[in-house]
Length: 359
Ligand code: NAP
Ligand code: ZN
Image 1 (tube, rainbow, N blue to C red):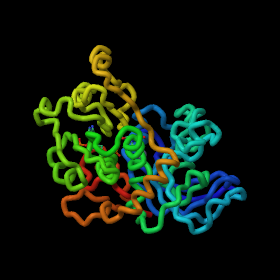
Image 2: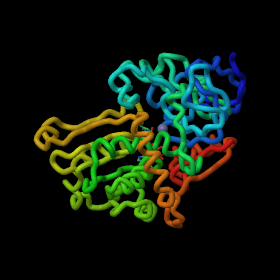
Image 3: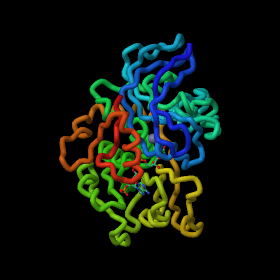
Image 4: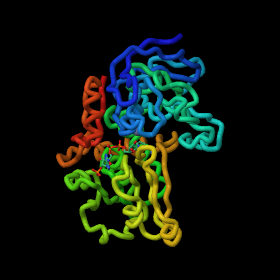
């Protein structure tokens, strides 16, 4: 049976969100139904509402860092029970048969995963029309049980939210490209960047923050960075210093060469921040080839890294919730302030490092 609920809907490109009634499709055998409690606001939700990437379909319910409580399970679900606390992220399903899915890297599911609120404009990642009935800015959600990640006991809802997309997205390249001793630079000290600094520290990698905002120095150091580089500084002093840079910038505020020059020969520039369509990657072949620097992209994370990240987090809650006045914290706001929160994030006026919207 379909189900009526309420959700914050973006009706057309650039329109503010409005609380409206929506109708969810019938619960499938492999799905769980959840009462949603809260949701992180990722910069991706802003890009999607303004269709920066050309992959949005409207009307759309965004949101992909949701925490909720299971209130019903489909007939084929044996892994989840009513009352379980779960997190829902960027993916809502995948083929579960390809090599990537079988080893928990559903984010590179070969036929394309199904995005939580993606539809046809997203190509292989939006095979089914979930634009209106998919996102986590909804009071009730129905999603494949495999993509409703159980949140370990003790991890508070508002700590879990920013990890579900932002944390996982940076945790994966930390696992793929870093080990203790790696000289890591984290560029863009917002939601993803702050999570990257904290999670790197927990994995024994002490990063350097790379930022366009001098006022973020204290917060970056408090989060665990050992150093702070600002684009206003003399970057020549930092040339060739890093093994890996994880760049979370949502726009090409700096040319790619600025970051690549900070890498050692053979180093890796990992881009996770996603600029608008058309803001291309520009670099020359000669320096790329002669220096053997590598340029890679990384998209969210699969179930394997998600579980490993939450295990690490549950054992280090004190650090993640550190009562440090210098630390930029999560800012909890009611869902009714979602539009103001989005505007602040885009205009870079947010005070905390992640908004968590609460019903
Ligand atoms: P955020 O909280 O807004 O942080 C972005 C940070 O980037 C800012 O705090 C700022 O840090 C820096 N920045 C540089 N140029 C900027 C600009 N023109 N506008 C705003 N910030 C700018 O965003 P987020 O939620 O961390 O997301 C960052 C990017 O990652 C977005 O593009 C998002 O869509 C993308 N994303 C990608 C994935 C993936 O799977 N690859 C997953 C989630 C998000 P400084 O002040 O320190 O320079
Ligand atoms: Zn996100």
